[in-house]
Length: 221
Length: 258
Image 1 (cartoon, chains in turn orange, blue):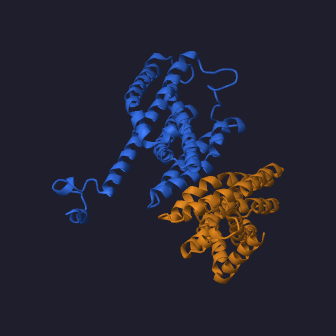
Image 2 (tube, one colour):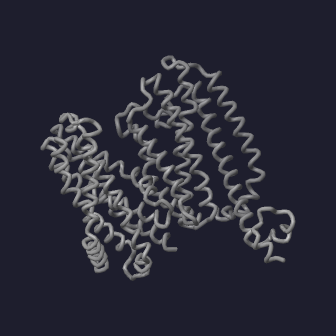
Image 3 (cartoon, each protein chain N blue to C red):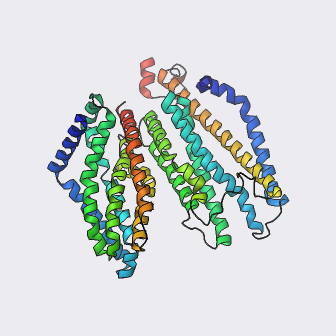
């Protein structure tokens, strides 16, 4: 547990001092969402209809773009090598880094999402469900994305590659995340979708740290 | 099983099998095509478009079959570190990707006259499209590293993670209420396809599976021979004979041997 908190504190401190990272993710999210009204036209009812999907897709892209820095800088300056050699198991290290990634990207996105929902004219019935769904979905995005971030270490054109690897795996979260909001907007219960998202999160939490740690060990060989 | 994982054993074993397998595959596909295109009845509703099925269903089967094969090879390469498993996984990916693409294309050609649309965002179609993306991601990842071994290992991990999609493709027609028809061949209460259509379908499925193994063996043999040539070059085996003939021999090697 000590190793976990140490990694978490270190990554958070780095993110704080370099500052701009979280702001950039939120800015990217807002700019991407803003593009849709230009693309499909400003009619309020059309925007309200597509709002949940647009917010989820933008959040997916924002979370994916920030994946590269989870392991890349540590890989380049050799920190990752020391972490693999440390007595703390690599799975715990991975978990610490993923939690730090979620705190610096997922959480700001959840805060920014209602703002974009208002701007896209989404009905207020969907707001609470949107927040809960994102609370369940964004940690899973960080967990699954970490596998991709670890696999591309040392690859050419890693940034483009990570999108090809990770986005197909993000699709279930997108389906149920947008589905939950959709159900709430139609006045139905979103419990089923939220439960499935919870299941995805638990499964990802249990399984992905091992896959990510395995990929890191390969990168270190 | 580990005995067969030695590249030299594989080369020796497959050399006599290959012509027979290739011949059998050619006959199966020829017979399958004859029955599919000429000797089977037309569907009472679909007319001649039903013949697209004889290409579509085997392609879909091969798309899934190749992915499962790739994931098993990936697991074997991660667990036992067999070099042959790596090569098999790499060699399977393009074949599987092609079959998956073929399945999507034939499906959309059938969908236009039957459903009145080239594409619907139906669970079966969408999950098949994701399968194609997984193949493309695997191929891109495997080729993204300067060290081919590193690429293979990263690819094996990805193939295993992506395997969650296979049951989703298979059961998508049961879990969701979709436009794509549910399973009609592998069912608890026997196939729902007419016997006159089962024969060409079975022949085509067997023929496509045989085709996969023929191409797989060819690709693996090619890769093994390429590696052998590379190893011989590195060990300097060709240096003596290369003095006057080989134009591709690096200059510094020739100097060193003199």
